[in-house]
Length: 133
Image 1 (cartoon, rainbow, N blue to C red):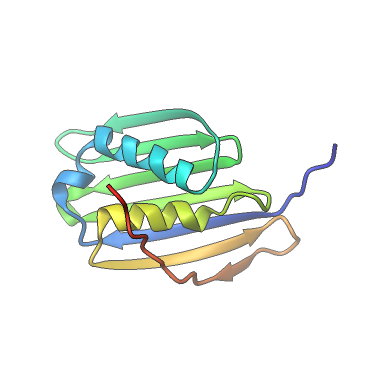
Image 2: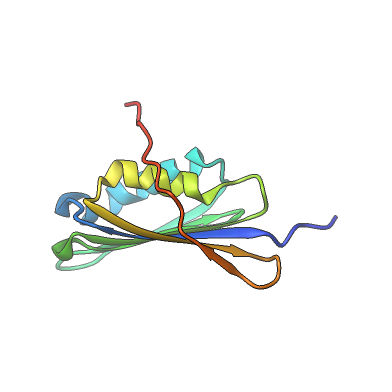
């Protein structure tokens, strides 16, 4: 069986996020798994680290690649990225889900299109989702 090398890698810097959300590895881990499921990815494992005096890192290993977040709550900042291989899982949906949850005041995002030769860089349009709770 031959697999496509095509992939999309979306990275976003989120500013102006609530300290409490960014300072809870447990909360972020739950939201990251939800985000992965929202984009149709297959979660293989989750690792998280709560830092002292503040901050958290969460890495979700996907069958399709990964979803990660590293936070600086004292600055209201989160660095988020999602890379997925193939056509079936769209990493932008995971990013949009997280942006909807975190509600940053400002975001800066880039998307790398990979695996087709020279990488191309795009600026994705952020589409925060209406979350149903």
